[in-house]
Image (cartoon, rainbow, N blue to C red):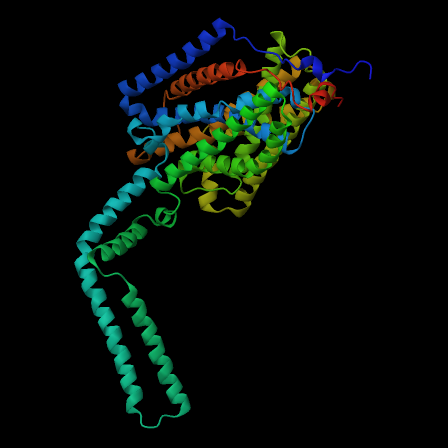
Length: 504
């Protein structure tokens, strides 16, 4: 058909050349900012707690963008989407920053840095409770063994006495015999249960440790199967392997398709993406449980995972729009990306603005309606002091109403500069959303033992900005390097013709 683009004309792809100055600036900002941040941490050990929250805020924000890129890549393949083929490589490149962000997150995970136990209080509280429980168990062990041994002997004697009672009755009536036999059976069960208990010194000690642990920290005891350091490390490894591994494999197959054009890579990406989606969802959900919801281990929300997913998907699409606009302004992708692609990306961003708002309101409404203390404390903290004005201004109005109204206009989504401005606004609101999730926990957590709980830590905002700039520099440097390592679009994908000529 006349006027249609032919994929064969683009089979050589288009390579990105990193501007040397931009690369140097990103590296200098990232490395320099990180070194300065941790130098301050060494020189001011008393600020470790506040700085841990700052680093977590920066890492989660940029990691959420990379995870969103992985989601869009998986969705593209799983749905056999054709329109987004020319921008899929940008999604893949964004997703492949995940391993870099996981490396940047390492200071949060190791206790010797001084961040972990300040962020996730269940670590030191669990350890303290276990130390105290173990100490008490050692003191109570001998008396406990003696008392339980006496109970076992008493139970055995009760069984023997019940059997003797039955034998002493010359000719009991059927009802009387049934009563005595039932009594013997009950006593035998009780005796057998008591005899099963391990009354060795180690067994008795473990029983008493559990008993004392339950009495001193009931919630941590009930969650001990999940909130323990061994399983916690297993989960961290799973997050890295699942999220980083999926991103690496899909991009590797995509680049292989560019190189040899073998359709097996296309089929593998489609088939495996469907299987990868559950692992992606599980990894991201439990990562935000462990890193964000566990900032207060007594609080929980069953909608937490999907809430953070909605923000990641929304704002990674916004980031992709901005990245695409910047590349086109630099002279790249002009022949393959049209305003139809912008329109479709704008519609997806608009859809997730609505989805994010729906999930955010649903979580708030269900917790407000149930009015359970363990759940409402999250919102009570964020409705205290200036956080209430912050919530209404930035999350309700800024994160939802403004982009929702602007993106209702069809023409806005076809104007690269305008839709990029809306995407930039969404990214700013997303940063403020992550800030709202993490930072209100800092003041109460770090000042709880001082006798006067404060909602904020004076001057800590400086660490927040420094951490954000440092991690942002590392994120930008890694993304630039990945962008330059292959063609900016999948040049031999079977769906390239459809994407080049998409009409929305």
